[in-house]
Image (cartoon, rainbow, N blue to C red; front, side):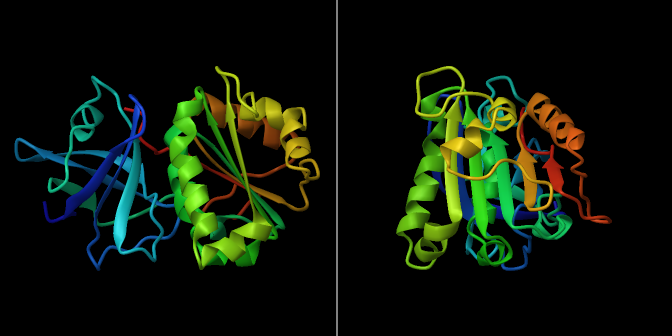
Length: 257
């Protein structure tokens, strides 16, 4: 188990029947960039059972936070959803991931597009003062099926707006756009459709998608990611990586099981 930190669970919060978040201690040696993920999990019968989880906490915070789906027959999440304060989780010593600012070429507007627990890396990024220095506007889009599934993101943004440090930063720069697909809500529809129709930009009183100024990060379900990739590539946006920054980056490693 030397490849892992053993961290103590500090708090667990169940948001819906399918979503929960938890906070844990953070070893002072654990370093990560905002937007990255690590392998985390539990020790089962003396062996580690792990999945990739994005850190929802920022790299300047003393505790770790994670946002997870519950899958009743999932090898890890069926057990992880039952953790309580005082339990021990395993956290891999190495963080990685593509959703970091350096993987994008400079731009003016940053679109953070997420569905479900794909919000987690952006929960980390919107607490990064450097991101607000890099971009004039940051648009956080969170798509869910039902209104109740938006609660984690809504509380996150509300708390940041009330924060002494981040409140002034967010006031002029962060635009938060929650949307649902299966219930009445002020914003309705799939992210792909909202971008294609310009409904998203009209709703937030912003200019349409622009290759010259827009940079994009995406995290969510495989179908959503593939649809958005095709949409952006059809408009000449290029995918970025550690070796070659681009107009957009995708993370596929967040937990679905």
